Length: 154
Image (cartoon, rainbow, N blue to C red; front, side, top):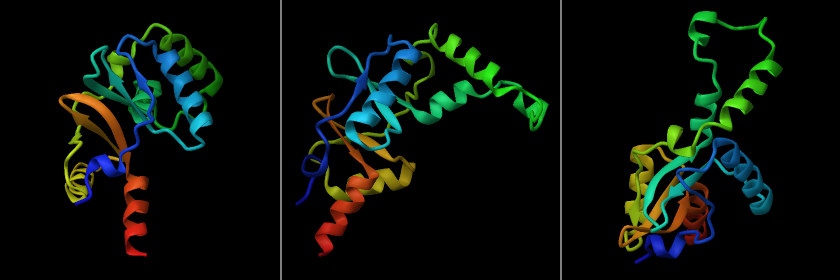
């Protein structure tokens, strides 16, 4: 039986809940550069290895989105540079815990590969933390799961 342990990636980046948003954005870039893959989310873990949440690219973009865009419409006359400067300034005062997603789907290290696949499909997640005794021990990316299944077919 193939389990989460067999396909999980044990080399992952994580953030502390009190990391500044600016620091988290910097880590996204460093992680993407070092791993040579796009990083869409980073787990937020406490000092005991307990999963507290995930900070995703979507969380950051929702924070960056001007709050009244639904009123302003297309905002075609708004200067983007000023908005980006303001977002960067505000991100220095924000912590990861302020905007991270906390309703996290996870799997146990001994869960069957198809349990992992079912949870990822059901909850439409692209990455899923792997826990052992409530501590994070790895992460499975949907692309790794897909290519693992392809390898099994050949």
